[in-house]
Length: 366
Image 1 (tube, rainbow, N blue to C red):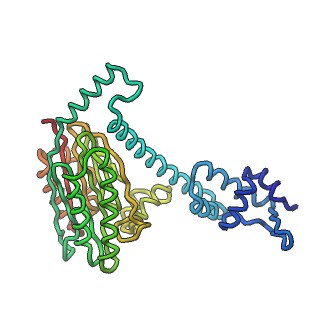
Image 2: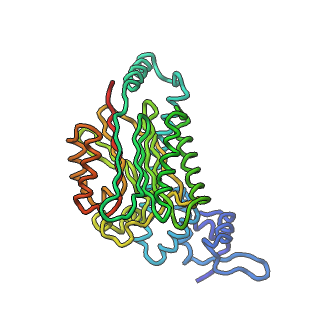
Image 3: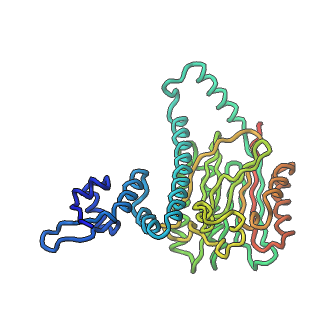
């Protein structure tokens, strides 16, 4: 099999010579031979499938580090590589939707009269804003040690603008979860309007730095919280605490677990049913544990409709109480406090193997 010069290989692979030199330096696509005298790079046709895969993945925006992992997997298990690409793109679409919500929010905040809006449309927008301004939150929160754990490391909070649940872990987990919620409680009175997502991101960053500087051992916390802006709920989420929405009788999960088993579900290598008994089901990929790599939160804005009911909870609830029971309680409990007490009671009735925390809020018209 003949060798190809870098120019010929670039044309065949649809990659530029400059890109090929970069990928060689990064160890992503090394040439078959480098001339010891001239330094010229030579490739062989057998390298074209990997090179073309690199080109395709770059076109969809996959980071170079991830491309290397996919290409290595492709050479041994092409179907598995396809599943990883699918999971990556599903994540991109989720993050794009979150950014779309943010753009809409910023336009609403910064544009008094968005371009292209007619008088009739602006009137409808004004009426909608007036209607949303009459929505308030009715709320409750609770937490329980459970029947097995020696201490309660979960923290739950519900206030006029904030719902938050944090699940601490490690020797200093109770302090970590409490500090995370306290940092967000401080935002209830201080952050408004377009600053809300920045405020949430800054608070999470401070909490994570605190865990790095003042924590003991392998300690940290997960966190899921929603801050009411007056027309939307701003969501911040790290780890495997969850947020659910009951709307029109249907319950949907509006957070995505940052766990190993969830990544395997996304990749198609594990079913949701298999995940419940997987030996590494508790392994977190993201948490506020002092590590900059693990602390990146999901941030998004969520539209609110009068009549919505929101549940935030730790894994001490949803790992032992099934979705049908959660839906039944959310649908039938008259008040948020009733829902919280009933959900915790269900977790305890299933043996209470973990701490459990819940926060429930209803969007009601005044």
